[in-house]
Length: 254
Image (tube, rainbow, N blue to C red; front, side, top):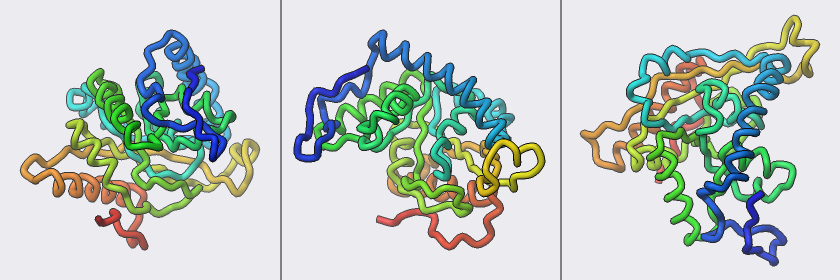
């Protein structure tokens, strides 16, 4: 395991700053990533299929845009379940070469650390100095053609059926990296038949759908292009989820 050497004793937890290894090329890290990818693609995938009834739709879109996505992409999805990031990984069939920003506090939890770090979790720094390493890491990931996943809603509400407002920072990252955005949306089905035996009645069955990629409009300036990408991704996800009237705005305005 990677040890973070700076401790914030006032809060009794590790501090994620410029000392954190945002890029780790050690043998131990690579081995644990492979082990994690194997676990996600077999045991966890089987659990999601049997216990959550996970259906995946829209993989034909990935084939349609294979050329445009060859250099990597940034996936976004509504944040509605504790394992929904893994559902995105299942959908796009990427485990080892997927990375995502995570709240540092989650990596401070011993129960979450191994799973989150080795599925590609990169902590959002707790200091401005740490942001240089964080940004550099994602630039490096994209340069290698790896994929990035972000939850633009930022907050998780389990089994919530509306699409919450997006933070534009996700799309700023995509714009800066010259990276297409691949929206995914999770919807729910009633638990019926065989699946009544595999999970609690109050937990629905899950469907994740891959949607058409969103590309930056280069005719717009940076600020307008970022907003435009966020609005188009949000609208695609609302439509795919069958939402007619959303009580939420599409984005958080400045």
